[in-house]
Image 1 (tube, rainbow, N blue to C red):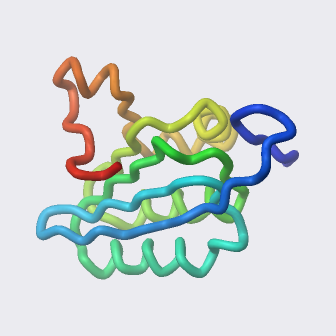
Image 2 (spheres, one colour; image 1 turned 90 degrees about the vertical axis):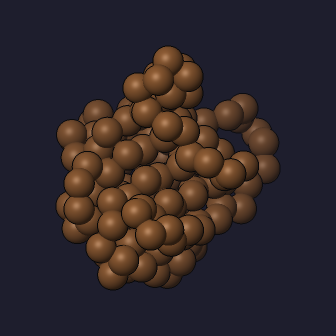
Length: 128
């Protein structure tokens, strides 16, 4: 699969980050910047923490600019190994495209800010 990035061409790559926030009733995974093989260890650890917690998972993708196949595989793993339906908040267009093409989107509940504001799902609290 080719490389797909959101944002303007010619801009410098934004270093990515992955954070897992464990709460009693859910695990939030926050993805930002470029999530690629360089973050494989961090993303794998976040998914393992979510699995071990045994609670439903939520993924905040509002600040994601790029995700490669290793990141997509970890999203699928998170969705298939945590209880309930994994919620994905505000995926950028680049991620929505990949969710459709790979059919990984069928494993997730995708929620946009518009839907959250209309009361269909709570947006992630306290996550910038």
